[in-house]
Length: 78
Image (cartoon, rainbow, N blue to C red):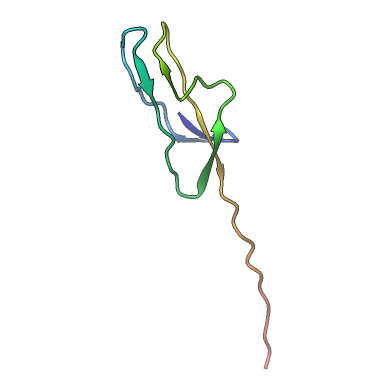
């Protein structure tokens, strides 16, 4: 799952492995989202790569909105 720091979902849950044998390797990847940058894995996330275990693993990538640069404005009179 891909979320923002405040919990907004950027991309909902998708399955990487379904009914895979325990011990099989899995790999997930960091994605790019316009206007956001990756900041890290959620503290409750399972590792981005690892080995399938009994039950369900949840990998959660966290992103932060890019800062919008302040545009300074001024006036010119004639």
